[in-house]
Every structure is written in C-alpha cells, then in structure tokens.
Image 1 (cartoon, helix red, strand yellow):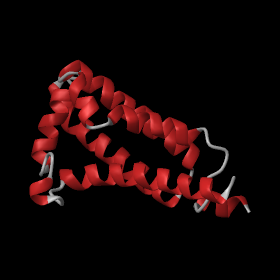
Image 2 (cartoon, rainbow, N blue to C red):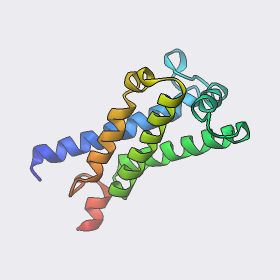
Image 3 (cartoon, one colour):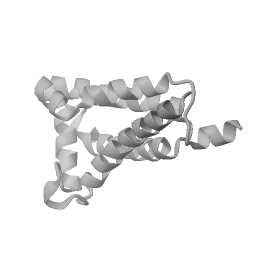
Image 4 (tube, rainbow, N blue to C red):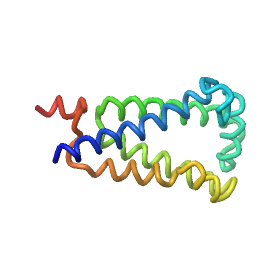
Length: 141
C-alpha cells in the first residue's frame, strides 16, 4: 500500500467512525440546535417509525441496540481494531437502516442522509487488505 493509499484508508475509517459517533451524540442532545433528533425520546419515536415491522414493545430495545452498535462500531473503526469485521457489520447495519427507511419514510431520506453511501463505503473498507494507522496494523507486526 502506498503512503497516499494509507492516508486515504485512515480518512475513510475516520469519516465512517465520526459519522456513526455523531449520530449517537445527536441522540443525547450533544449537537444542540443543529441536531436531527436532539434527545433520546425523539430518537425512540423515529426508531418506532423505522421499525414498523416490529411490535411497538420492542421500539426502545431497537433504539438501544442501534445506538450501542453505532457507538461500538464507531469507536472500533476509529482506533482500527477488528476493522474488517467491524466494517462488514457497519455496512450491514447501515443497509438495514436504509431498507427500513425506504419501507417506512421513502427513498428520499436515505439519499439525504447518505445511508447508501455509508453502507457501500463500509463494505468497501471491509475488503481492503490492510488497515494502516490502526491497532490491527500494530498487532500484525
């Protein structure tokens, strides 16, 4: 891998990671007036809309699971630990989000939030041969 590719790979990982962590921060009100949800209750309500195929009693659990997954995947991608499997899991999670959004609120929201791009980017990251500037690279030495 060239030096340029190494930096691009790091940028790729960081962009995916920060996107996930930003969404988690939004759910807890850390973005203030620039938020999408702004608080946990709004996010749970939004989760209920997206998970129309689940019983309403599972909405809170789905919101917790999604938030935990995004937080964990965001941290793992940022530090570059178990990057390949984390990237596959992130791509799958974002694909589920995209399909749920299409089924509940339509295709436009998936395009506005670039959820297809995030999913595809995650899968592209997953098929890379190396992850420079990562714990994975350090442990491989």
